[in-house]
Image (cartoon, rainbow, N blue to C red; front, side):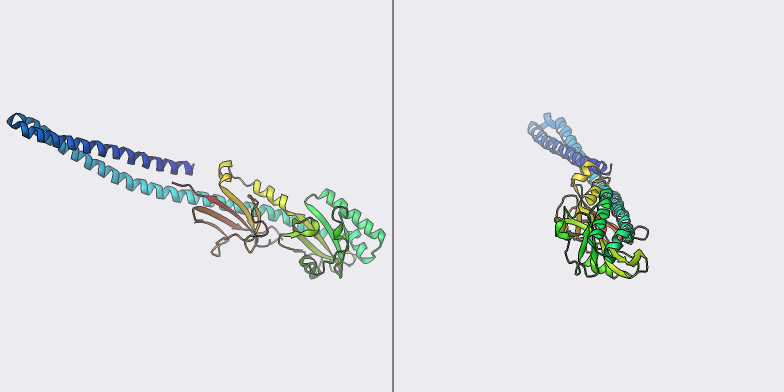
Length: 341
């Protein structure tokens, strides 16, 4: 609606300019005819005196109408300029507010989803098959843990794999050893998710790493959640290893961006993104720069808002977190083309 109002203002301005120009041209022609008529009347002498008076009045009328046309042009131009300014600002404010709300909605949805992942990892770390394989590793306990992890993966399709690593960082069981055989025996002692898990203070704690590309999992983009596996599955038990769960990021993020409530026309001129706390692009509707590029977002220390840059409107919103999940400082962001005159 706002786009239509602004386009109408521009069209009214264009038509008005065109019509006033035509009036001006007609009056200039009329003025020239009046001058020519006066010259001919002067040549005719006494016989042309009456016609000279008519020609003079016609010239004055043409000048008067030209003056009115000029005043009309000035008045309309001034009002159209005000209408354009007001319409443009109205469009920016309406679109900016709406896109900010949509950006916030996108990041809220993903954080609600990831909150559930934080619950999953803490729950599964207490499973007896997970604690048994770390307390008494053997072919039997490894098989049982593998079977149990595979069962979980069949039910929770948002994960690529689940890994159990011993206290030294060696992966001893996974849920998909056939699909990702390189994971078994891998040393993850230096990986962020493992070290963060082993630093947790109790079974109520978890850690989550920003989106990264995991080569062992086929180069997939993953959000990795982890926590320490504790002796006996007790909340206060000593860490005996770590559980890492790998959230299949790309399809989930894509589904969220596709679900943002933009019309087809809006979507055709917009880029929808999720950014991490460093403004690195972790999801984008155009598929460009994911996990490699940083978006030049200017927040001016605001948690949400919008601004214009190079003919584009940029709207953003910082995650508010969800329940006990505070989030990682991610932002939803929508970049859209503004209406051109």
